[in-house]
Image (cartoon, rainbow, N blue to C red; front, side, top):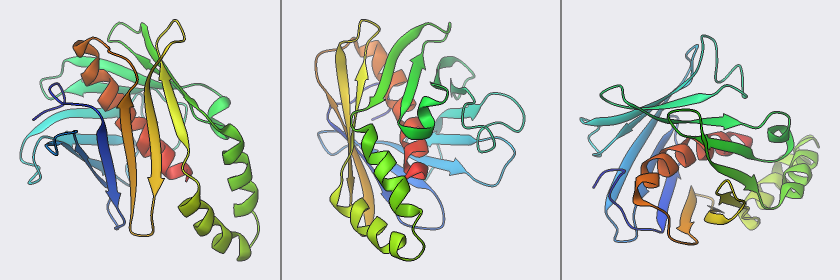
Length: 207
C-alpha cells in the first residue's frame, strides 16, 4: 500500500512488548506501514517499512544532531525517504510540550505546513499529579489511562482544523486513529502520516 496511497481514517496500534513496534492500517484494512523505533542509541531513529517482514524500508526519521532525541525532547526530527530525499520535519514547540502536546510539521524547505495541539492539556496535568503519588498513583494511573482518551487536532497555517488524532487505550494494546476533517491535497499525506507517527511515538512515552 505505502504511505502515499491510503484512505482515511487510519488506525495505528502498539502491542505491549519489550520492543517498540507500531503498525498502521487504512480504512480498507490494508497495511500501510510497520514502524520500528531504534532504542538505546545516542540519536533517536525510527524506521518505516512497507511490509510485516520488514524487508523493504521506505522511510527513516532521525533526530537532528548528535546526542539528540531521547536526551533532547526539543530536537527537530527529519523525515527522509529511503533514497535520501527529505520529506519534511517534526519540531516540538518549546516549553509547551512539557505540559501539553505542541508540534509543528515542516516542509522540506522548513516552511510551516501544520501545527498539532493537545485538545485537553489539563488531562496531562492531572495525569502528572496522579503519577506523583507513590504506589497508589500507579494503580490510579492505570485506570486513568484506560478511561481517558485524549484527542489532538492538526491545523493548517490559517488555523483551520484538518486532521484529528484520537488516543484509545486498553489493557492489551494502545491504539490511535487519525481522521481527516476536511479534504487536503494528496501530496500532504506522506508528511502528515510520517510526522504524526513521530508525534505519536513521543506522546506514547508521555503516557
